[in-house]
Length: 359
Image 1 (cartoon, rainbow, N blue to C red):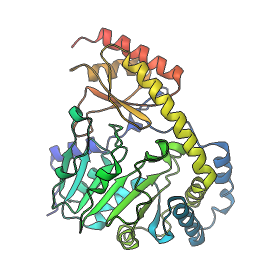
Image 2 (image 1 turned 135 degrees about the horizontal axis):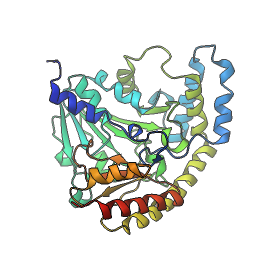
Image 3 (image 1 turned 120 degrees about the horizontal axis):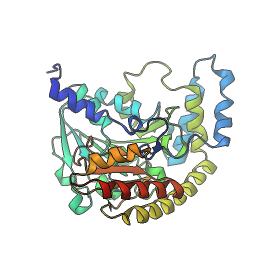
């Protein structure tokens, strides 16, 4: 039965609704948000700008069809297995339309799906991974009665890339398996992606253009799944939910040469990540947890996390706090992959903060 949230529930929802953009205030060096760059590349800006003269007209069904065709070709799917979204966040907002009886959400993980489900009065069970085994996914830990399972791959904020076989093992009759692949295109070759796995019953995959193409302000992404499942998900949508520029972005970023460009960007990002991990791991007191994503999860000495974050902010640096992610606490922080000069500044500020902050 639906009920008004009490203060504790409201505080819990507020924590789940906390995202990195809140940390990244103007003027701070931003390690809190995982978008790469300040905006899309020139060629993509030109494609988006070319749509502006048509903004006096509603988004055309033919434009949506072109976007679905482009995504389908990119992932080896049929066009009716594609639903273009105003970003993955829109897809999460639509989850209550699936009417799950019990949702299981893998944590630590992106918190928006749980926030949406709880706000809709849907029971949610948290399936916690453990740092002691590298936050490995154990499919058997998911309750058999869960008819909606949500997992990120790679997972945010742990940066763990789960084997596709383990993720597939979460599929079950009568269950929707939602795999959030918002960062999959930032992993060279997308080795564990299920975007093209049309034969997995109940599989729903969300993809985002936000991170690789620096389109956070545009809101563009898509869902992949069985046509009937996509129809259920889309049932509450208003008319024209995706803007003309966002549709054009989906088309442009799904074209073969753009996909090739994203693969090359992922390789550069992986090299930069490895270098950043080595620099930060050399700071006394900092533990860099293993992972494969355009961000790193750091563990700081026990009891110092909040004060170190405050010291970094005083030094003009924003990092993503960890304690709003179920399963990790205030001594964890997430940092995006950034250019070497910015990483050097972060490392120096971390070393200074840890030297001054005594547990």
